[in-house]
Image (tube, rainbow, N blue to C red; front, top):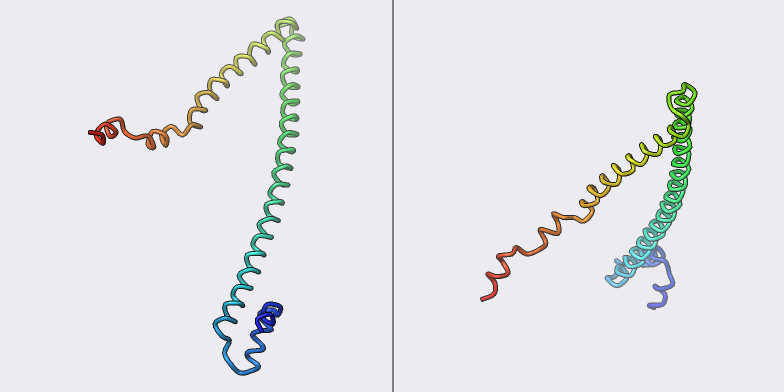
Length: 146
C-alpha cells in the first residue's frame, strides 16, 4: 500500500481518502506535504538557475557595450585634441611638434594626478576601520596573562 502512495500524485491520494469518507492520516498528510515541498524547492531552484543565466548574459552584454562606448569616447577625445592641435598650428601659435609635446605633457600630468588619486582611494579597499576593530587592544593581552 505504501507503493500506491509513492506512485500516486498527492491530489489522487487525497481524493481517495475523501471518497472513502475518512480523514487523511498523519502519514498521508506528511507524504503529501513532502511532495509539495519537493516540488516547490525544485521550482525555486529552476527559477534561480534561469535568472542566474539571464543575469550572466546581461552582464556580458553590458560589458561589451561598455567597451564599445569607451572606444567611441576615446575616438571622440582624440578627434577633439586633434582639432585643437590643428587650430593652434593653423593660427601659427605653436609649431606642430611643439603642439604634440604640449598634448603629451598635459596628458602625462593628468595621468600622474589620477595615479595619486587612485593610490589614495585604494587605501579604503583594505577595510582599515574593520581590521582595527577586529584586532585586540594592546593592553588587553597583557592583562589576561599573569
